[in-house]
Amino acid sequence: MSAMTTAYASDALPDGTVDAVVIGGGAAGLSGALMLARSRRSVVVIDSGTPRNAPAEGVHGLLGLDGTPPAELYGRGREEVRSYGGLIVSGEVTAAEHAAPSADGDLRFTVTLADGRTLTARRLLVATGLRDVLPGLPGLAEHWGGSVVHCPYCHGWEVRDEPIGVLATGPASIHHALLFRQLTDDLVYFTHGTELDDKTRTRFAARGIRIVDTPVAEVVGDRDSGISGVRLADGRVVARRVLAVATTLVARTEGLAGLGLPMEDVPGGGHRFVSGAAGATDVPGVWVAGNVTDPMAQVGASAAAGALAGAFINAVLAVADTDAAVAALVPAANSAAATTA
Image 1 (tube, rainbow, N blue to C red):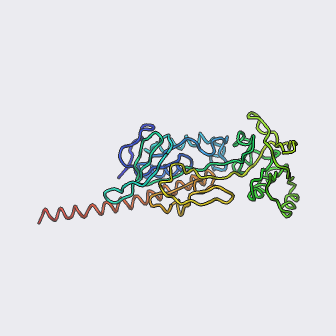
Image 2 (image 1 turned 30 degrees about the vertical axis):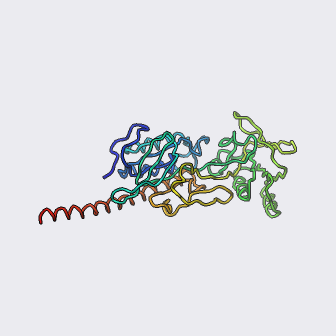
Image 3 (image 1 turned 90 degrees about the vertical axis):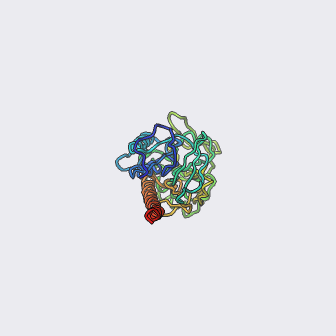
């Protein structure tokens, strides 16, 4: 059995090879680590401490935990992983690469941290999440996660009945507008240089969605009270309390190039790691879970994907452990036969 029977001291790396290194300490990574630790696997989570939803006041749509602040949710998750012997390490991964296999032919990976320390693991779970890239519009980024939102399911109830604007970034923004129209009767769609055909304009008019074709120059407001409106290129200000914008979803891949994980583009811009069943990749020994491979997944879906990947990693390791044990019987049997001959 390879197990961590006690939790390691914070940030003190274990000697030798661990069963799994989880890169990313969000919902997917911690859930995967929890499954592995509960299966008595030695697991280390490398947590950069920069979750995507850090600016949000609460996590929503998560049954039993709706409204929990992200920092509180992840704090609980880290303690749960530690309670089963898992190790949480604060740090950034600068390299993850294949290493020479073990004597029995099992896979090995080397993970290097920004401070130069290294870990060796039998399997990897990549759960680094993604980065939301906002349009380069003055005043937009400073209100991100507050009065500038992207997901009607993550933030919709909290902004219901407010004067909401949708800043178009492409075709997907049309559906975005229909979803936010469910939450308010006062919705303005800023085309912001994107195309809007006559059929869509008719549909918007039928739903009472006002269309503004004049380009947007900046978002107006302050950090304390949030946005107050949208200034157009002609100087007019359209009063709004909330602005919804579809971001470009870019997987966090820093330090992972050495693994050779296949990637693909995301509709509307951005990219993600390609994955199959339970987060398996085309690279043996490496799984991916959460927003790094499923950009639209909310916290609950990411956590479920991480747990499933963790369970599959444990199952694969169980087979590898058994194969190694069987292989060890052969030389032992031959030695016994030679002794009695």
